[in-house]
Image (tube, rainbow, N blue to C red; front, top):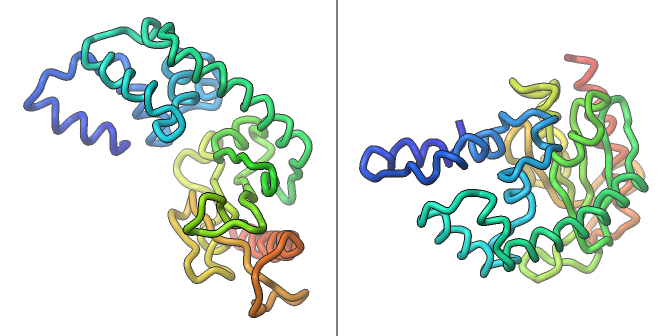
Length: 236
């Protein structure tokens, strides 16, 4: 059950939320990990809306959508609104770039899909990778950020995110991915099926060095994460 479903169930006991009925089932699936691969890759209007609207990037569109839902507008009327349609078209163009990066950098190591988005100025999530790779992976690793990035700055630092292929393993992955996220970064972690960390400065043996991380450290981190993945795959 997603956080959205919990909030919906509580609030609807006090308020009429019939206007949200068209959306909540899809929000629940997308937010709670219950969406199928076919549904995620579909062009269902709610999926399109969720895929294309980010309140941080399109605050005007997000506010208009919130007000429209409260007024009882249906999904198609919302998508037809110029400010929303503009955001959707922009996201579709960005999606083409993301797909190019995936096709160019994707590799699979013992059913662990690895994609490098570092230095591209963009990123994507685990759903996108595992949906495209399908049953050929049990989990994915996404490298992102910039060498000159900072945690507190506008440009994110080099980092990695790990996601179980929930389309294939709906009840949890084969490996606790926090083993990878916490291997070198004491601040890394998250959920066993979705977590992340920063790229760490490593020597060739995998020891942490006292220096800033660089792009040269990425493959060193990846090679040790693959080793940890393989060791725990064998245990499974």
